Image 1: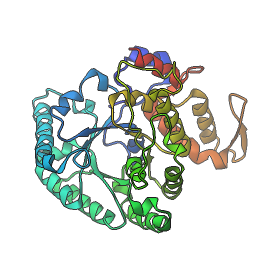
Image 2: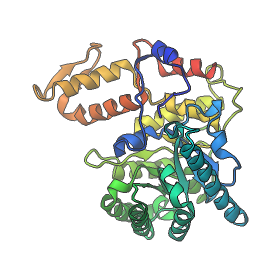
Image 3: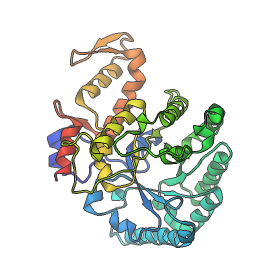
Length: 376
C-alpha cells in the first residue's frame, strides 16, 4: 500500500523530491493513523464492494470504512452483515488462490453499532477477520468506551491479531458546553488506558450539527460554523498534545461533484474548492486525514498532506541539530527562524508525514500535483 499508488513511478518522480513510502497495516500505530488519509465510507449493503475497491477511480484510496450503522437501515442490517462477510470471504479465497495481492487492498474497517454488535460481527467474520484493520465505534462516550475496548481486546486475544478501535466523538455530552469538559476528561482517561488500540479518534460533524437542527451549506467550510468549531477546539486541545500519541481525524464534508467535473482551479466557490480549503484548515488545526463519502474527494484530501520541500528541510535541520544546539537556526530558505526546543515535536511530525505522503520538489505545490492527477 502506498499513497498515490495509482500514479506511475515516472509521474511521481516528476513531482516528488522524496516519494511516498510503502506501508502495511503492521506500520507503527501513529504513522498508520496518519496514513489512513481520506477514509472512504461505503455502506455494508453495497454489493461487490471488494471489486469496486480495485477500480481505477479508487487506485489512490488507502482506507475504507464499511458502515453497518447509520448507512444501513435496521431492516437491511442482517442482509448487510451477510454481504460484508461474503465479501471478506471472497478476499480470503482470492488470497489463498494467489489471485490478489492483499497489500494492494485498502485498509478495511467496519463501523458497527454497539458493543453487542461488535461481538456479533467478529463472530460472523471468523477467519476473515485478519483482512480488516479495525472497527469504528460510533457515538463513543465515557459510558460505553471501556466496554468497546475490552471487547476489542477479547477479540484480539481470541483471533491472535491486533485490530484497532476508532472511536467517534459525536454525542450531545461532547457538543453541549455544560457537559463537555467532564466528558472529554473521562474519555481521555479511558483512551489513555487503551492507547495502543486506538488508531485514530474521529469526530462526527453531521451528528453534532443535527443536535442544533443545523446543516452546513456546501459553500462553507465547517470552520465557519462556530458552534461546531468551538467543540473541535476542545477535542484537539484534549487529545492532540505532544506528550500523547493520538491522531485525531477531520470531519466529513458531505458534498461532492461528479468525477468528470473538477472546478477547483476555475471556481473559488466550487465544491472542490471548499473541500480543499477545509483540508488546509484541518491540517492547520492538527487533524490528520478526513472522512470521505465520494471517490472524487480522495485525491483532494490526500494531496493536502504532501509535505513541501521547504518544510521538510526545516524539519530535518531542527532534528539534525538537536544534539548540538538547542537555540535558533536560520532556515535553508533564509526566510524564517527555526527554534530547536519549541519546534522539535513539530519537526518529528513533519518527518513522519513526509514518509507517508512524500516530499514535493522545490517550486512544486500540492495543487500542481493535484491538478495533474485529476487530469489523468
